[in-house]
Image 1 (cartoon, one colour):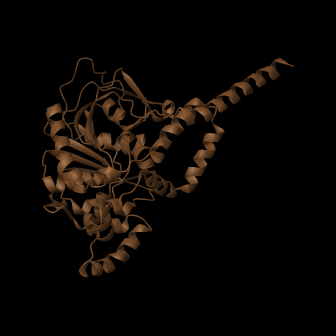
Image 2 (cartoon, one colour):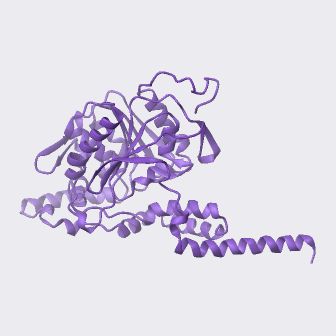
Length: 398
């Protein structure tokens, strides 16, 4: 056998061994492949399943993100902390996904103090968690803890999807004028326009639903458990929005099963869409009635519980909103409606590439959603004085 044949046979044997190893290990030792939630942090508050995390400054002079793009770790810090607000139905670690696709690391590298409100892992026993729990109870407690920890009364909020809506509800109820900036990413304000299927159906059902309500039947008379959505069901529903994408990504996994790095990246991303927490029944019931049937966000006022009304016209902080050009869950029109319901004088709206997940943390997000957000927020945040060890102005900080 010639040397070249021996080398080819050796490479084939190594590839086959790696293929078999990864096929087995991704089943029996899944945690070994999951690369999310690796940025060093401390929990500064716990209340039930909710917690608040503070992320430590990055170590080292540079950080490398998606596409091999390298950034200097900015030494001069901004005075106004950034609070990241996840949606429900996913885990907060999607903000700290892969080392090179972590929104947390990106903003840390650019000089921001970063906090995250983690809604935890609701189970069937948490079906009673309502919008009032999240926005009237937990949200104020979280921001109070962040203000005490950071020493700053002024804060910036960044909410993805439902995280943006929870932020709006909090601001509409609390009238918190110390929230200086709000960024929403793919947040469905006008649910009648949210997507091609659900919007028209909800609009069509709103009139007969009002007749049923007048006849004496109300959705809120049903038990919270009746509306509770298990995480496995959420996962199936999400994957159904792009079934071809699910199949093609799995085919690519098989083709690259011998590549440890590829398998780890696939497993980490797939964990987002496969391992989802339950969606609490009380919240689903409220969203079905107030968002789905009656489109309350688009109308500017949203009743929360028995004693609170979120008036979105009271929201006047600086606003930056995004929509994805290929988002099958939240349309451009559905997200753009935020501009008409808030009273912010400084507001902007951007359409960026990607679907519902891609607009937030896809391969292009670093150069679009993240970069736009960083530039916009830096102009609206105060800085500490320049530090001696900060890179010189000749060093490029993107």
